[in-house]
Length: 194
Image (spheres, rainbow, N blue to C red):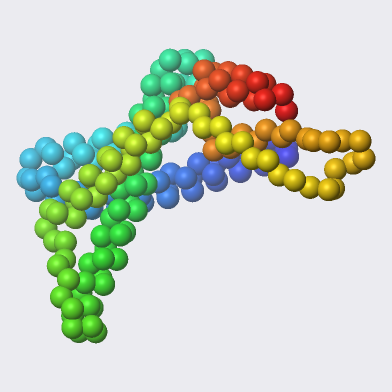
C-alpha cells in the first residue's frame, strides 16, 4: 500500500473509531446523567471527563509514538479499563431496556405484571454491573491458565508417534500487560517442549 493510501486508510479508521466511540460515550452520558443534579457543574464536568476518556486511546498512541513509555502505560491503563467499563455499561443498559420493554408488554400479552426499572435505579444498576465486570477482569487479567488436551489420530506420518502443539490465545499484550506476561507465556510454552 502506498503512503498516501495508508494515511487515508488510517485517517478513515480514526474517524470511524471516534464516531462510534463518541456515540458510545453519548449513550453512557444519557444513561447516567439522571444521577447528577441538572444545575451546577456536575454534568458539564462529566461531559469534559467523557471527552478526555474518548480521546484516551489517541493519547496513549501519541505518547507511545514519542517514546514516553511510562506516560503511555498510564494513559493506556486508564483508556482501556475505561473502554471495558463503557462496553459493559452499555451492554447492561441494553439489557435493562430489553427487560423494561418485556415488562411493559407482559401484562397485556401474558397477564403477568413485571416490575420495571425506573428513575435512578437503571443507572445505578448499569454502573454496578459494569464495575463488577471491570473488577473481575482486573483480577483475572494476568492469570495464566494452562489446559492440556490429548487427541488421538491415525493421520500422523509414518514414524511419528506424537506431535505436541502449543496454542496461546486471548492475550492482550502491549501497553497493559506487556513484557512480564510475554516472558511468562514463553516460559510456560517452552516447559512443554512443543
